[in-house]
Image (cartoon, rainbow, N blue to C red; front, side, top):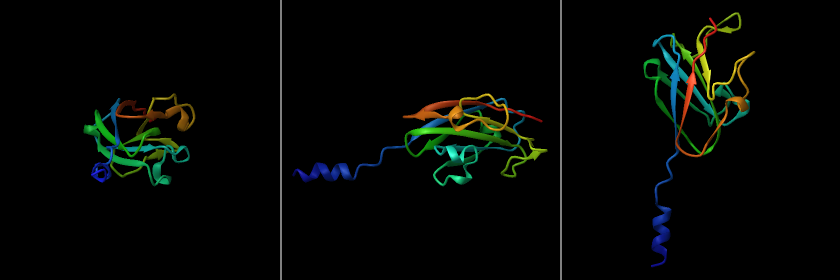
Amino acid sequence: MALLPLLAAASAPPTPASTVEVSITGLRSLKGQILVCLTTNAKAFPDCSKDKTSVRMAVKAADAGDFKAHVPATGIYAIAVVHDENSNNKMDTAIFLPKEGFGFSRNPAIVMGPPSFKAASFAVTGDMRQSIKMKYML
């Protein structure tokens, strides 16, 4: 009979991942999509392509006011977003300046290039919220 509680515990569903509710403000249009990169890897920030465990998603710009990203585990994360207005799945540039909007968790100041992981990072220990204000250079 003592084995029964152990079997019940072993077959219990896994603990659900945390959710980060994200709201994007300051979009200059509702065209295209928002490319989202959520990572714990400082070396892969802000481009998640080097992080196989990152959370990457595309959200219609019209739905970017409020959407959810599910994180696989607690930890220190940073978010980078791009307003891909022409839906070509990349940030377009002109003479090294972004032609499309971008933003980061914690809304750090942008001086030259993207902020550091540390400036954009936040701890995820459960469900939480991040508001990101878009910036446009051109």
